[in-house]
Length: 80
Length: 230
Image (cartoon, rainbow over the protein chains, first blue to last red):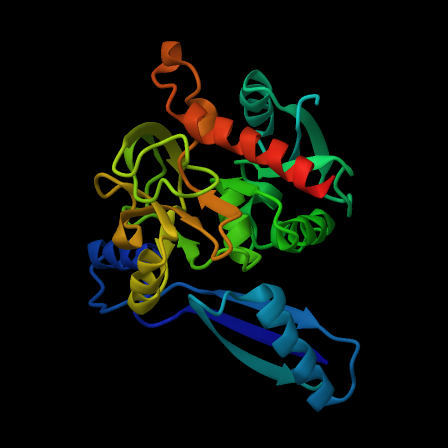
């Protein structure tokens, strides 16, 4: 089983990286609005049970992968 | 009694550990380096310093990976027993990630690494770390960081300030830090994190000796903790 974790800066959190990317895209002539830059974590899991896998990945997020004060997470499970 | 032991935790990527050791040694501490894989502090530890640097290459988020290193279990127990802990720069980031301090540190608003002297105002001189200062005193301390913008929600900032936990603020806006916060102490008063570097400001020949006020107070606190534990 594979999990994909999308980590984003929460709404209202200053994201200067997103602002810099927007500035560059605008210089290239693209008409873009707000841009937020986050990160993707792909995880291979030994677990076969998807409820257990989700619970594991949720714990990974709260213990290490994201900081809940400033980041939101979205978990996608992909059963192979 | 002899010189109090201050443990300086060394992570892969720490780079101010030796400066911290030198400064604290000059102020009367006996320095013991603790490797990040060690899960215990020296028995005689009177205070802990988490030094500046780029632990684990700042992977994931600054301080995130260090916050779950074995040495941090020992630091957590030490802090839980009332031991004084000082986190400088990356050490502050680690303490926030370890939830030993409130808030989080985000990339500087200007997206630039800031490396310069800053004026920092002591907001609360009634802490273990600032008791050699006066409330309102301005300290000249250098900063050098890319991710030093402290963030919390506004309500939390008001609450922390009311409780005296906002210990240091920049005199001007250095990095987009909420409320110009430069240093925060925990509710129990024994864990302080700050972005500026007191260990680089302990000799007026190098521009400022104001950092010595904070570090000497830490050495005092280390001696007191050793006595209290004995």
